[in-house]
Image 1 (cartoon, rainbow, N blue to C red):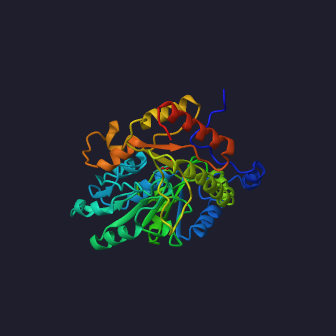
Image 2 (image 1 turned 180 degrees about the vertical axis):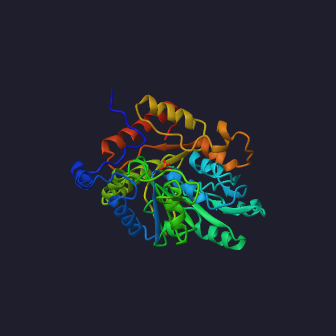
Image 3 (image 1 turned 90 degrees about the horizontal axis):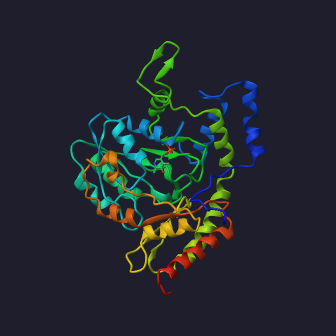
Length: 373
Ligand SMILES: *Cc1c(COP(=O)(O)O)cnc(C)c1O
């Protein structure tokens, strides 16, 4: 049996580099609660993404919950169902009401032409998702937010390192949540952070992730616990040095995938068109267009039979999950894309023979299904 190929494989730095970074922990016995490596990582991130304010969290989800805690309960926020459950959970767990907007057919981000009709006097924010590493229409979103006096809180879990017109993606909107989960392009094992413009939020975010505790005898707000520990921060510090190499390796693989799929008419390639965008190649999602030969599910199953594990990501859309069944939506494009999309294996140290194996498997599957090319 051939070695299985999974949809992703977490980056690991050379072990000695990590050891070197955590050595100090054995000297100072400072394991968590804003230790020196935490501080070092926060500063390094802030510099890297050119964001004045950065607050680390134990994971991206809790960071998003913290970001959305700035709104009054019962307010409405406009978001999309074409995302990971975390986005919607964070909205509802803050007792906000999600109003679902459809996505673009081209890049799967929020369809800005459909936002204005969803705005009511209860709307306080737009919560768009930069999916697969592709940025939303950040300029249009800015314009709408300004016109209606709304905040923009991005789920930026997929876009670490991305730039639009030379500007860091973290500098668009009011707050961006980045995930540093092991499966992301850049990670700290588990982890996440908020990047934001308003200096006044720093205190609120530092408090909320530490139970709201502001001193030995004072607790100011009803917070939770989502502090990043020193071992996570150390992984982040080390991995940051390898980010550029990781992205370059992915770019080469994406080029190989693109050249291959350009020849296959029933496959829609990921959107990487925008030439003002510096990409991070976080994922490789393809859409199996309507055709007489093969469906997305058949492709998924046939690949799995050949030990190649892709992912139906995002499927189903959030509003079709058991816990959100009561939320009615009319997001036709999101539903359609979710039923046809498949994310193929992609990670920096993917070998040429592995990507060749995937290409050969797809050629074999299409031939099996009677597709003549
Ligand atoms: C990964 C991810 C999250 C959650 O991040 P965690 O760090 O795993 O908590 C949220 N939204 C999207 C779109 C994600 O991909």
